[in-house]
Image 1 (cartoon, rainbow, N blue to C red):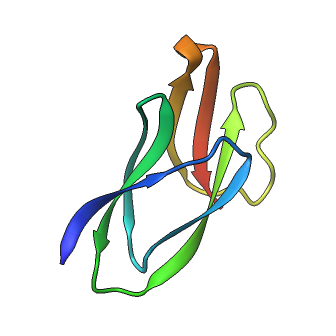
Image 2 (image 1 turned 30 degrees about the vertical axis):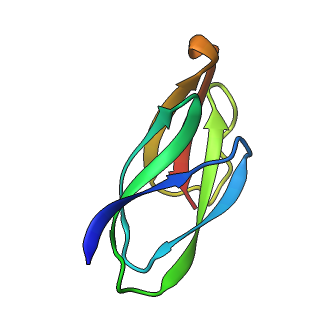
Image 3 (image 1 turned 45 degrees about the vertical axis):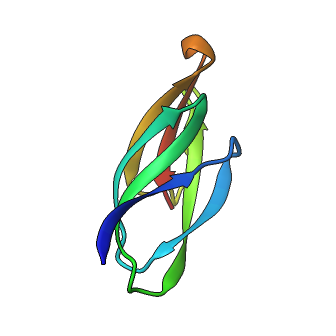
Length: 86
């Protein structure tokens, strides 16, 4: 079945998110004061691990960082993080 799933993100530089193979990231936003990633997934597919990097505004983006996924603002905009897939 194809549907949209939410994947909570931790406030760490680098994390692994398990989602079905072929999942397409739709957006990264804040919900209930916490960052989350939404993706279109096929629930019939097996899970795979995807590496997500959060980079704060003004911080260097490490080499090997891939596609931009979205930006979240926390703490009234005092913390701005940009999500990338590695």
